[in-house]
Picture 1 (cartoon, rainbow, N blue to C red):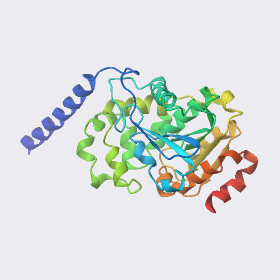
Picture 2: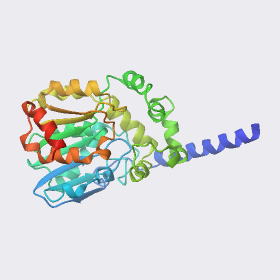
Picture 3: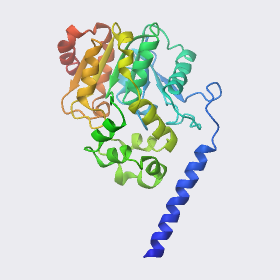
Picture 4: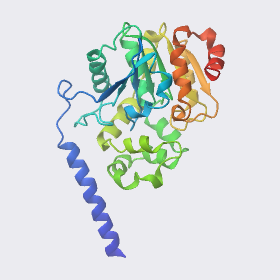
Length: 305
């Protein structure tokens, strides 16, 4: 038994060592030589930039596209360190992520006033920052499942009451577990709310792109510092009341500081888009009419589109 345990330990140690060295030996991040992977779908006159969440990919958004691509052109981006985008040896700061996305937006001329930027989870943090910093680029933003935490302790406290995978992601051994994700990221452990294609793409990150993006963007971002820049911008929040990755109340409180539209989805979880993609597509179609006085009317309309 002791010999068997030793063999297992050595196998795990070798996997951890290999994955650590592979990342550390990667080239450092260079914006000009490491453009993000992306895809443009649709041919409509209006434009939408779509930014996925932690461990996601551009394929996250490929749900019921027939209802939107005849009127909108979609820019789907694999964020730095995820999907099929480069995974350099990097700190994965907010600035790194923003510059990488901005480069593609400019390259494909999505920096026009008729563009809406959409983000889910970590991508929603990027969407809000883009909206705040580029006053002439976007007509508005839609953010889904925005994660807001005071600090690491707040993050760990919330996650400690959630699912097993959430507890692991927030734990002190999260980076080591991430190095071993080829072992446990199989269909046995796939959450019920993740389709197989989304789950498969979630395997494409590295321990570094995961842990540092989590720390730099989700835990350490100060969205309240952007409040003044967002006061006169069109921002719509879509948030499930049963979200176990992004607490509902902090997101709603933040939305109230910028006079935005907040659409709460009763019993919706963190992956509500995957179950009800029509909500997002209908919100985008109605975006030009958004303001807080129409919140109730808008909420009813998206269900009766």
